[in-house]
Image (cartoon, rainbow, N blue to C red; front, side):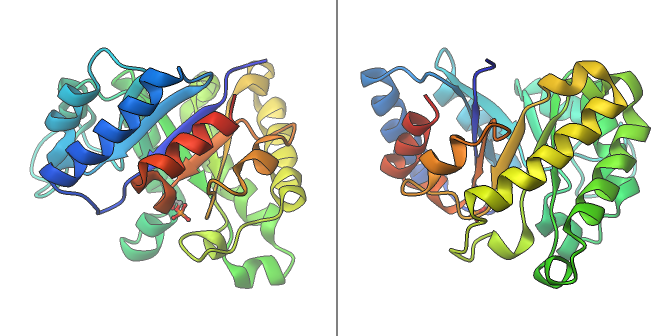
Length: 249
Ligand code: PGA
């Protein structure tokens, strides 16, 4: 069985002092009990250099929260995959629902960002998820499969190099979690879709995200098609993040 992946998404939180305190706490916990899963933190771009130094030589991989679809040029404010590579970034979130919702990212833009990350040798964590309205309309599978299909079509054989995160929008930052059964059902459908695209995709890790915390992680991670978690709020507290990592053993 493949090792699970627990990735923290810090979102727009942190400061030099807070990041240092958070990572010191997490690293101390991991020194006491080595993780039996992969661990990553996706940090705000200005802190990549700081966090690269703090996690050097540890079990924590460095991640970014977004990447430009363009390689370089007149795109004020954007950060390219090559720039992320300069800081040892291994994972890049693409298509997080907050990017889709507040920054107008379309499925096509998300697919182009995944391609940019892959071209630079990084692993895109492609986020998909339905709104509450879409779930209540019975459109969950249709929405997440449409979002993933555009990425699959764009990246071709590289689809086997993706990580996919299912994050129901109604569960993000709300304290409402998909039940293990609800999450498993969507993950199983995504697995089928990936396998149909390419036989090697059976091993693409499928993460669950949306109010995963120390209390519910074990049950969610016990589902057969949940290969890890993308953690927002609980990734900002060392004890909680460590408990989720322990639950992924
Ligand atoms: P949450 O965020 O754990 O705070 O719900 C998850 C995410 O948005 O990736």
